[in-house]
Length: 335
Image 1 (tube, rainbow, N blue to C red):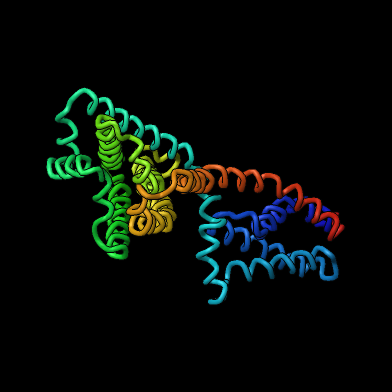
Image 2 (cartoon, one colour):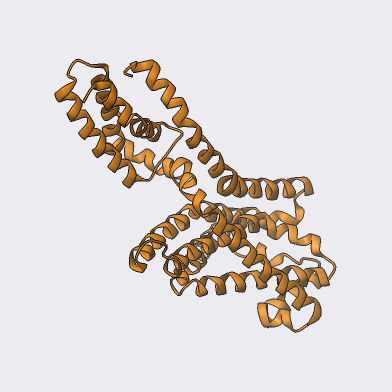
C-alpha cells in the first residue's frame, strides 16, 4: 500500500486518538486502550514499509504519548484522583444529564405533594417529621429560636455524623435502584415530601425566611441526594432498557456508571457536612448578604459542575478533532 493511501485510510483514527490524549478531552479508558492497540499495529506496519518516513516519526511520537497516558507511574496515579473530578467524570456524565432532569422532576413532584398536603392537613407534618421533632421545633419557635436544633452538639461531632449520614442516604438511594428503579423513586419521593412539608411547616408559622439557615448546607445536601437518585435510576433503567446489550451486561454497565456518579458526590457531601457542623449554627446571626451568598455560590457550583461543565467539555471534544487534523497536516505533511 502506498504511504499516502495508508495515511488517508487511518488519518481520522489517529486524529481521534491524538484528541483523546489532549488535556482538555477525555474518552472512556476501554476505548483508549483499544485505540492504543490499533495504533501499535499501524506503527508496526509503518516500521516495516515506511522506515524513513515522517509517518513513522509521527506514529512513534503518538505511541509514546499513549504509553505514558495508559501505563501511568505511581506519581502520576496521584493526580488521577484530581483528573477524575476535573475531566473524566464531567465528560462521562454528559450522557446522563437527561436522567438527571427526570430525577429532578420526580423529586420536585414530591416536594409539591409535601407542600400541598401540609397546607391542607395540619396532621400531615407530624406524620412525615414525627411528633418529637414537631413538638421540639414548636417549642423553639415559641422561644424565638426556631433553628436551635442546629446549635446542639459539637462542631466536629456534628460534621462527622451529618456527613456519614448523608453519604449513607446517597448509597441507599443508589443501591435501591437495583429494584427496577422503584426503590430509588421511593427514596426521592420520601425526601421530597419531607422537604416540602418542612418548608411549609415554617411558612404556616410565618417564619419562612428562617429556613435560609437550613439552605446554607441544604443547597449542597439536597442537590446531591437528587444526583445520587440519578445514579440509582441509571442502574435501574439499565436493566429495564438494555438497548442492544443483554440485561446482565447492561445492568453491570449501569451499576458501574451509577457508582461512578455516587463517588462524584462525596466531596459535596463533605462540604455540606462541614457547613452544617461549623456554619449553619451561626446562620441566624449571619448577615443576609453573606447567607444568600453562600447559598448562591453552592447552587452555582452544583449547576455548573453537573450541567454546564459537561456540556462545555462535550463541545470541546467535537471541535478538537478539526484542530488536531490541522495540526497533523502542518506537523507531518504526510499526505
